[in-house]
Length: 230
Image (tube, one colour):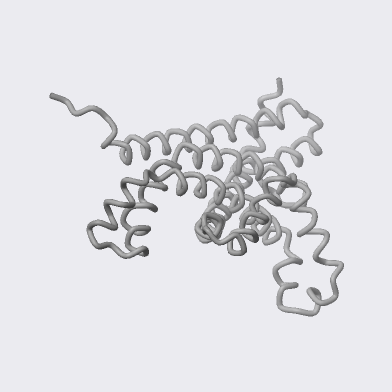
């Protein structure tokens, strides 16, 4: 194993790591902002209200991320209406296309996580809020949503990790993320094992940090579930 190749290209890997972390972070933020209203609409009792958000969830969970990315990165450019509009400033950039695809994808998965936890909220908690004179909006704000976010933490932690791993697809549309950096190192030195195992180790470290962070969050937000010390 040629460690010198790895050492010589560490700056490129760190540059790729920076791109990956920023891309994943903003994708998750945008995805969460989209997922919450989609999840709320998907739990509506009106079938006509929930049909579109459920179709959105089904589409983005039912098709591969790489297909979604190619539709956005390669597909949007074929429409003259987009080329002649302000949207072309977004869709002509590989980075913005990747961000858009990742945000839409994670929104679908996150919305399904939130939809499930919203519907699993204990009926007694909702009735207790109503008995205290809370409006429907206040019940959501004070009871349903806080409970939803707490119970969704483990599943959402997995989604963050999946998003991190899925972000490697950005490397196939010219973005120099971690995977893209590994491809460059391999093309320069023809050492595929060293190139990609180094990228894998970087992904492992970031995954460990994410798991540690969510464990800490669960420990804090689920403190009320632990038995009290005598």
